[in-house]
Image 1 (cartoon, rainbow, N blue to C red):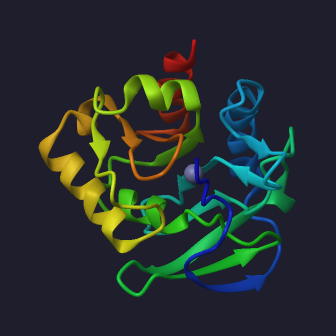
Image 2 (cartoon, protein in one colour):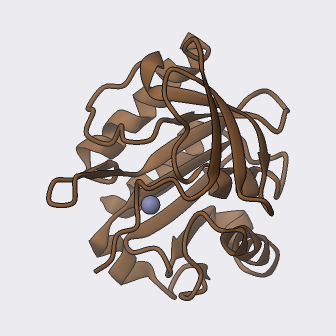
Length: 200
Ligand SMILES: [Zn+2]
């Protein structure tokens, strides 16, 4: 198995700054905690890298608040563990973020998904060996040769949203990203609940 999690592949323009809106980071933590307890967000001890991340859109903008890179081992997060993505360029693999933590290495995947529809206001990305084995090619699945954090992955989600049940069911498997699963929702509760329901 190759886990390419946790390494920032994009050109990261990070400006250290104050914690994002406290109401939003509390909401993020409240849905992150059951995902963490289920092992869907966490930390590979042997590899020393965290996995899983979640975000919410800021109002109706193209900006979002996302969990920071290398926070997977933390059970209860607070504002110090989040970043505000202010700008990005998918084709140039570039992300600008502000906050106490540097934005997750999968920020561009989240950005690409928010671009699909303004009805999508939250994105959850988890890892699960069991769900990945069970649901790959059963649920909408990105192409196996496409790895995470690439412009090609962004195009894969456009394809799934247009051509499969992903738009309605809100869950997709990333065949080219070991153990990787993504859910979307009108709000964070819907996105998180879709994954938690599968894990039960
Ligand atoms: Zn991942």
